[in-house]
Amino acid sequence: MDTFAKALKILKNQGGQLDGVLLQGVLEGFMDGVLILTLQGELVHASSYAYQILEEFTQEEPQAQLVSQEIERICQAAIDSCELYPESPVIIEAEISNKKLGVLRIRARWLQLDENEQPLILITLEDQHRTIQSLVITEAKKYGLTPREAEIWLLRRANRTYKEIATELFISLNTVKKHLKNIRTKLKFHQFRQELLVANQ
Image (tube, rainbow, N blue to C red; front, top):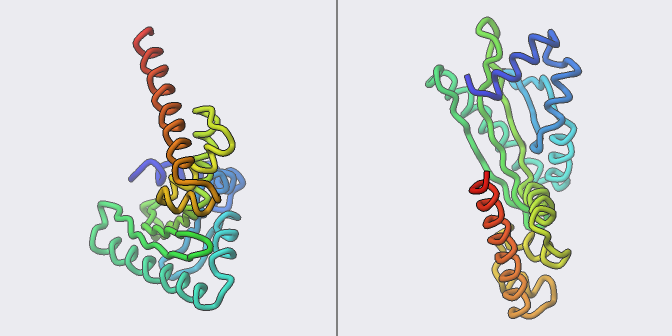
């Protein structure tokens, strides 16, 4: 049993039920959206972030159908993996791309909280654009990036080319290169300071 499953089991035992206040608080704190389903596909829990992600990615009918089909497909694959590999959890993953919203990563795995109970399916929904945004905000503060550097770093972290960044921000290619050089210098300086601190302890 992995750390996540152990934590959920402890919380469940403390709260008595999967819908306990403490457990809900923990699930709401995850950066990813969380869905917990029975093997029959009944929803046991959905975090508010999961609802938000699903609402964003299912506004148009073809996209809604695609998301629904992918969730069903990986749920079935997780159920199959539970039967084939009962001793080792397998993570099933799928990605759905949307030009406007970015990439939605869906992960499913079975979750055994108690040996006497039927396993559940844990689905995490990751809006990769939002995950990268959070990461860049943290890095901008950590490394002392300017607002413009943070903007450029966000696009670079999203795997945009130098040319795409220049086009999107209406700046020259040389300006992009200059900003990225400054960003890398700040990252290296921060790493050097950390190494000095460790060496002086």
